[in-house]
Length: 425
Image (cartoon, rainbow, N blue to C red):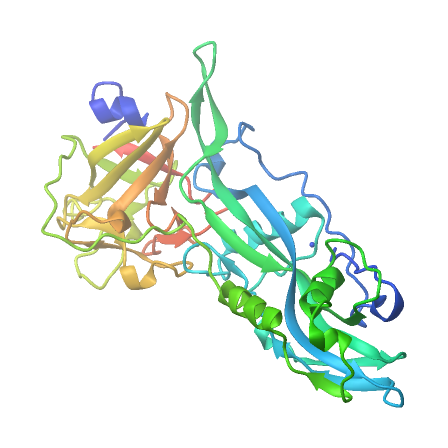
């Protein structure tokens, strides 16, 4: 065995505070629960261009590219209070719009990368936002309010809807101005959009109340449609039928149930005929640095890639070739073809969105589930991190042991166990 040297082509290449609705009169109070404190700013999060180490090659972190905060009414009811009907009343509101927390194309908020993404959103905006899956449709639609004066009210629940886009930071070698090399956080594979929201507020507002522009209460007052005939007419106490404007607004806002648009998990290509692979002449072991165990492909189709020792009985199952290799901005992309079983490394399609899904092998096809990005240490070192193109997840293992599966981790293994060494064989 020998380390990767400069003799081969690939050897050369591989070396959240919810804002208070400050309203006057009866709309001056929000939910009974007090607004949460501002989330601390994460000053330790890596930024593009920051330095990283070889232990970071198998990890990644999100960074927030854009954000938008928009007050949104989720539940609403027009309500008329006459003389003699003031005081505490419980109003059953109607669903106005639904906001569901989502990250990426499939909306999965179970992975560590998705949770970290939403955490960074809250930190960057100073808002306490939902960082796990939830939906505004799951909350009670009733609002109990003390109506101290007669009038035409909009009874509401609302929140700040937070949307935006994120990118992925990966550690890779970057050539410096003086020709030397260093490891830096660069924008890697995996970007998309997110949706979340802050704590729900509830209240009641009249047309004549003065409220802050752009607030949740102002959105409710606008929905009240104060210029309508209903607002100006006498009306029996109780529920008021929605105006034409309210109906139009409800139809517009209802499609807000969304998982966003995202490049986080692009649609996998349909399996095709066996791919014609242009593979390197040389083969490599993908080994744990400084230790004998390396990736070993399975003999059985339903088994996965495991850490295995290399012996005379390995039957080339520990030998991998890089095929259809391309390079973009210093990052290699390749299929990993196994010499022993003739298959390509892949994440099974049904497990693509699953944290800790096992790396498998399958007949080679033109499929992004079988394509991997290789992030490299500086020249002279053969340490690498490996990322699946379709899922965006990094490859790693739970513990160092013979037979331990190689798995995908959305944020990688932060303890450095996702860093491997390519050893030419």
